[in-house]
Image 1 (cartoon, rainbow, N blue to C red):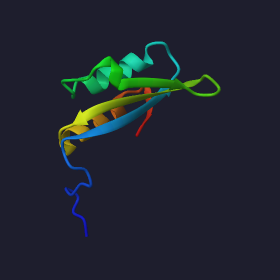
Image 2: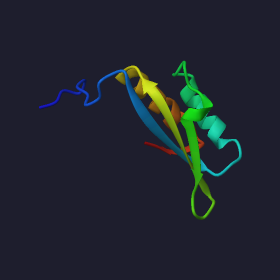
Image 3: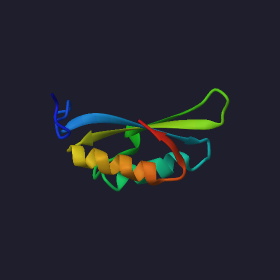
Image 4: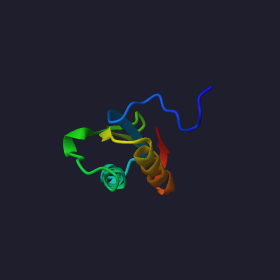
Length: 89
């Protein structure tokens, strides 16, 4: 049986984070800022965004080089603390 500290990931590893929110002009930069506080080497080419079919939402995918489980946990805490983020995967 896996312990809570066990991980299927081996660090460091490439890891995509998907952040969803309302389709507002500054949402992609907001999501980037939240992640960038935990990642030293984030560059613009690591970020893609896609607007939903109805145009109400935007999904931002940010690819990072994850260094630890603690780093990923901190990123997801920051994202979930933001009132503008509807979901983070």
